[in-house]
Length: 214
Ligand code: HCB
Image (cartoon, rainbow, N blue to C red):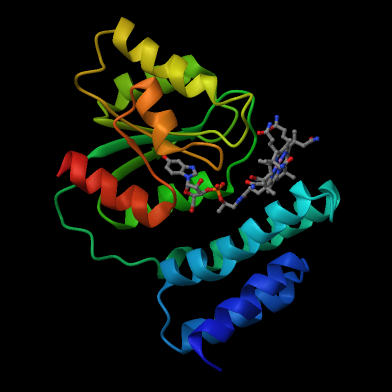
C-alpha cells in the first residue's frame, strides 16, 4: 500500500468513526516508517476536515462529529510518543497556547501544542474555553514571548482581538508575539486585528513561530 493510500484509509476511518481501524492503520503507518506529524496532518486531520465539510452540508450530525473527534483524539494520543525529538537543548521560546473563551474545540489546538513542543519550544497549553484574562495571567506567569490563540467559531473569534487589546493595555504587546489559528481565521483576519501571524495548520505554526522567535 502506498503512503497516499494509507493516508486515505486513515482519513476514511476517521470519517466513518472506526476507532479500531484508525489505530490499526496508524500502527501500519508507523511500521512503514512514516513520521508522526505527517500521519496526523495528512491522515487524521484530513479526515476531520472531511467530517467538518459533511457536517456543514448537513450530511451528518453532531453525534457523528463527536465520535469522529473521539477517534481522532485516540489516534493523536497513540502518536504522542513518536513525535520527533530533534529539539535543541536550549528552548527556542516560551509559548502559551489555548482555545479562547466560549469555544470547546481543541483538537487542532492540541496538535499545534504537541508539534511546537516537539520542535523545541516550551509550550504551556492552557486548554479550551479559556477565560481571556487567563491568557494574560499565564503569559505573565511563564514570561512567555508568544501566545497562540485558537478559535473555531465566528462567534468566538473576537476573543482573539480582545486578547491583543489586553496585551496592549498591560504594556505586553511589544514583548509578546501573537499567532492566531482555527478554521475561520485567515491572514486577512490576523492583519485586521493586528496579530503577528496566522497559521493554517500545525506545520505552519511551527515554521511561523521559528520565523518570529528564533
Ligand atoms: Co463544532 N463547529 N461545534 N464541534 N466542529 C464547527 C467548528 C463548525 C464550523 C461546524 C459548522 O456548523 N459548519 C461550527 C462553527 C460555526 C461558526 O463559526 N459559528 C461548529 C459548531 C456550531 C459547534 C457547536 C456550537 C454545535 C452545537 O452544540 N450545536 C458546538 C460548540 C460549543 C462551543 O464551543 N461552545 C460544537 C461542538 C463540537 C464537538 C464537541 C462535537 C467537536 C469538537 C471536539 C473537540 O475539539 N474536542 C466539534 C468539531 C470536531 C467540529 C468540526 C467538525 C471540526 C473541527 C476540527 O477538529 N477540525 C468543525 C468544522 C470545521 O472546522 N470546518 C465544527 C480538525 C482540526 C485538525 O483542525 O482547524 O481545529 P482545526 O486546527 C488546525 C488549524 O486551524 C490550526 O492548526 C490546526 C492543526 O492543523 N490551528 C492553530 C488551530 N488552532 C491553532 C492555534 C494556533 O496557535 C495556531 C494554529
